[in-house]
Image 1 (cartoon, rainbow, N blue to C red):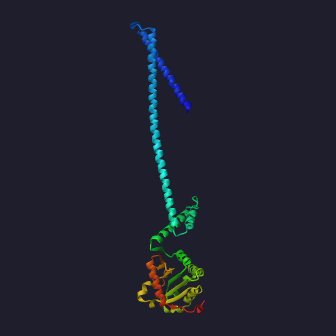
Image 2 (image 1 turned 135 degrees about the horizontal axis):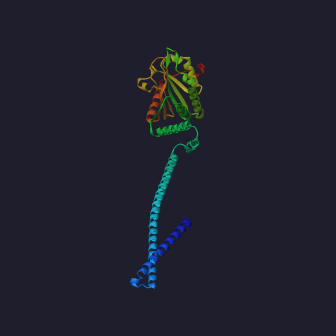
Length: 340
């Protein structure tokens, strides 16, 4: 860069010398031509030549200096624009950094004030970073779905009075059972299809029913003072002595779960609206399933929706209705005498 600048300066100086010499030569020749008319001496011709040449050289230097000043001004304008843009970018970056720090601080403050253990939230964040970006897109989509589902559930638990799930949700049922420590009360509807001679108690021998019973026993073993009570609502008094029904109740009694039964006809009219499949955990959360409408006698009802009720007033009302039904329900009998 310095050598290039030196080359340009040398070229400019040579040009100035040549121009000055040319102007001086023309001046000398012009004065010599006018010597006969004006009688100019050789000394005056030389002085005139030197003066004109000096003026020409000075003019070139002044023009060159002006060009340099103009170039410097343009460079300063460009430099100022670059500095302004750089300062704006720096200010934006600093502002964004402080904004990120502020968001991070607010998030950390929210996590610190959360009733949930910080380690749970930290584990979720840490494990989410382990998802390989170059891995299967399906795995990433599943991870996004699960995180969104958890976020939606947390929001519903904090702001809503009820959470609805399409179909039957086993995770809510098993999770609430395992983490209950005071009491579990439940109402279970049992229907007998006379045409097909099918008693709807198979749930208790299926995978979810077995896991549900085991989870209740684990809760009782963990919390000796805990009580679990279930009322079976039957639509026919003959079911009270049905062998399948008695085996189902024995599965409960063997795990320390207290059971009673009540026929639909014996339910007081003012409590008829309370008859539905529900479970209340620690008198604070109600788990309720809504069955699809039975269109034919052979149609086996399926769970249409599952509701998690966390509104305190509604849960207390359900718990009160259960206590009233428990008082009028009948004992099933001595568990030791129930068929295996």
